[in-house]
Amino acid sequence: MNTYIRPIAMASAFLLGGMAAQAQGLLMPDFDAELGRELYASKGCVVCHSVNGIGGIDAPALDYDPAQGPMDPFDFAAKMWRGAEVMIYMQQDELGGQIEITGPELAAIIAFAHDPAEQAKFSMDDVPEEIADMLHEADDEHQDEEADADHDDTPDADEGHD
Picture 1 (cartoon, rainbow, N blue to C red):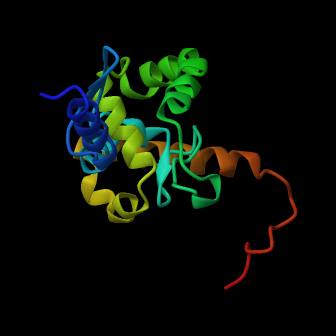
Picture 2 (spheres, rainbow, N blue to C red):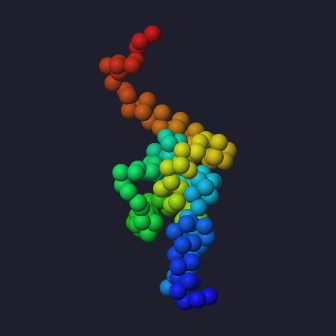
Picture 3 (cartoon, rainbow, N blue to C red):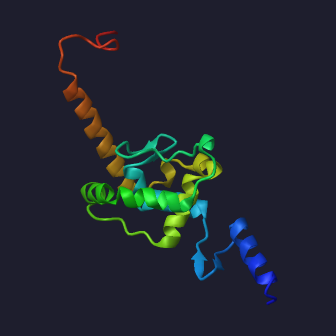
């Protein structure tokens, strides 16, 4: 291939998101938001993080925020790296082991976290049954914790009304 056409073709493929592109000895994975939606649920990310109000509350929500502008996927990965110790602890506690994610899978999950159209499709129907069961158990635990915290004798504004 012509030396000028190859870099242009690779850059076009990368920008269009249609295939992985290789530049300067680096392989850029495909940022497939639809696959990311599936992986976000099936890998268990949803147990701690939420999108559209669906998911856990133990970690930051991953709802797309257009006010923050485009996201650098390497910055996203760096944030995960900085929180790795806590994330691994939570994964072991909530899921029984550490989540294994490949580079292409992480790219897909990052794409999902930054794609408002794909996030709009996310629902409990995407969450596998065993993961959904964990979410329901976590909801029950959080409700029990809230009830335990409310031991005063003064009724809350919404208590005691028929």
